[in-house]
Image 1 (cartoon, rainbow, N blue to C red):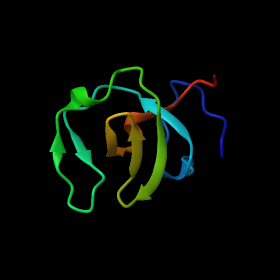
Image 2: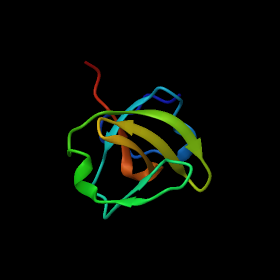
Image 3: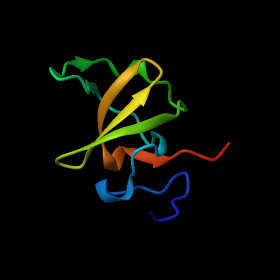
Image 4: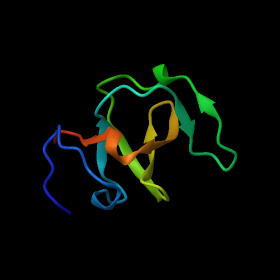
Length: 84
């Protein structure tokens, strides 16, 4: 996997399961990663919250687990989280 800085956009092939990510920009809505997806309000994810990639989906979507749930997010809206 390429070494991505915290603000480097990435395509769907650059994320691996277990990667730590955060939102690069605000999203208009969230889509849950459940078997029956639901639209959720965007304020469920704090701007600096770090999530973990738990699945790679079609059409450049990545399933990411955050504190308040798992959501499908476009890979272009994600950035690598800074190391602890």
